[in-house]
Image (cartoon, rainbow, N blue to C red; front, side, top):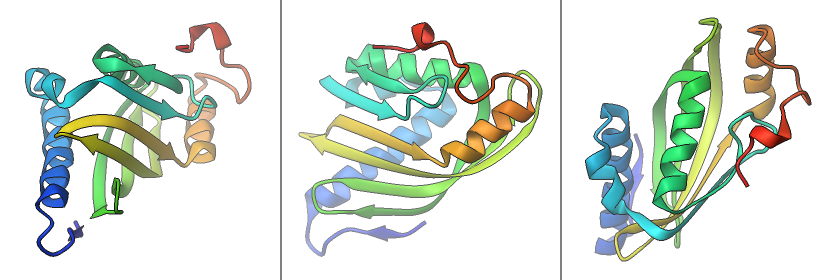
Length: 155
């Protein structure tokens, strides 16, 4: 993992630590430690091309996103880089695991962008290699590109 805070920038170090702890706590399922880090005005986005994609708001939206995603995927993120991009923290890695319903293997690139204010997560954008992920979903027989029910998406 690449950690690159600006020299002497304790806010940067704190933000990187918060993102690192958030990843660890989510991976371990320690939701009691996650909830206090999510700001009430939180907003997150993921491509609407994915069945669980869309915009999610507030702490409940944060958990709704993760639960919807977990309904489809059993994956882990291997973090390759984590760095301060000025006003955001960027995490680069590879998601690997399986499609839950069929155990079809999956591997795709992922970039996450976090904005924090006062030690709280304000925005979270997660960017995945959507064509690779959609291909894995299609190969598993779960969905075909363009056949995802728009009513099942969050607003």
